[in-house]
Image (cartoon, rainbow over all chains, first blue to last red):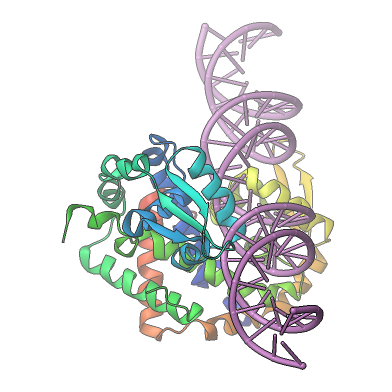
Amino acid sequence: MEVYDCLKLENQLCFPLYACAKEIVKVYKPYLDQFDLTYTQYITLMVLWEHNEMNVKELGKYLYLDSGTLTPVLKKLESKGYIERKRSKTDERNLRIQITENGNALKKQVIEIPQKVGRCVNLEEEEAMQLYKILYKVLHSLTLEKPH
Amino acid sequence: MEVYDCLKLENQLCFPLYACAKEIVKVYKPYLDQFDLTYTQYITLMVLWEHNEMNVKELGKYLYLDSGTLTPVLKKLESKGYIERKRSKTDERNLRIQITENGNALKKQVIEIPQKVGRCVNLEEEEAMQLYKILYKVLHSLTLEKPH
DNA sequence: TATAATTAAATTGTAAGCAATTTAATTTAT
DNA sequence: ATAAATTAAATTGCTTACAATTTAATTATA
C-alpha cells in the first residue's frame, strides 16, 4: 500500500464502467449492423417506440444527450425514413420528433436483439439486478434530473 | 407485461451503463480541466505512471483502446511533454511510450482527483465493491483478453 | 408595447472511438 | 534466400459526444 495506489487503473471504479459500456456497445454492433443502425440511433428509437412523439429536449432527458449530439442522429434517422422532424405549430422553437410507420415496423424486426445481447453478458439474474439498481442509483445521484 | 417490454429503455442493462459512464466522465471534467487533461489522456497516464514504459499495443490492452484511438491521444500527450514516443531499436514496428519527468510530476498534482470524484458518487462502500466486481466480471467475459 | 431575458435547436470546434485499410518491419514457410 | 504471412502503428472515414456559441421564437418585464 502506498500513496499513489489511488491512481492505479485497477483501483478505479469509473474505468471498468467506461470500458464495460464500450465493450457492451460493441456486442450490439453486429446485430444492429443488420438493420444499419448505430447504438445511439437504436436507443433513440427505443424512446420513440414507447412515446411516439416528443421534442428534442425531452428526448435528450431520457437519453442523457444534448441537441448537439441528437440533431445529427435525428437527421440520420429521418433520412432513413424512421422518424419525422416537424416544428411545432404552437411553439416553433420546438421540434416534434415522431416515429413513422417504417420506424414502428422496425420494432418487430429488432425484438430479438436484447435477448441475444443478454446471452453474451455472463451474469446471474441476481447480479444483473444488483448492477441495474446500483447504476441507476449513481445515475440519479449524479444528474438529479430524473426523466421519469 | 407485453412482448415489446424488452425494447423499453428502462428495461435495458446496457443503457444505464452507457449513460452512467458518460456522466461520471463529466464529473472528472472540471478536475481534469485544471491540468488540461481529458479523461482518455488521464487514464493513459495512469497506466504509464504504473509501468513507465510500454508499447501502443500493450497500452491498448490495458485501456481497451486500439491504435486508431491511441495514436492521436499519445501525440497530444507528447506535445504536452508528458510522454516520449520512440521506435524500438530491436523491432521498429513497436513504438515505445515512456513517461517523462514532467509526466511523472503530474502524478503528485492529480492525486486528489480520485477522492474528489469519489465523493460525488453516492454509493456505500459495499455497493461500490459489488459494482466493481460485477463490472469486471462482465468486462472479462466479454473480452476474454485479460490484460493482467 | 418595446426591451430584456429565456428557451429550444442548430452550429462550431475539438476529442474520442472504431472498423477497415495502409504502410513498414519482421517472421514463417517454401 | 525469396515469397508469403503476420504484426504494430498509422491513417481514413464516419459517428458520437459535448462545451460553447448562435439563431430564432417566445415569454417576462419595464
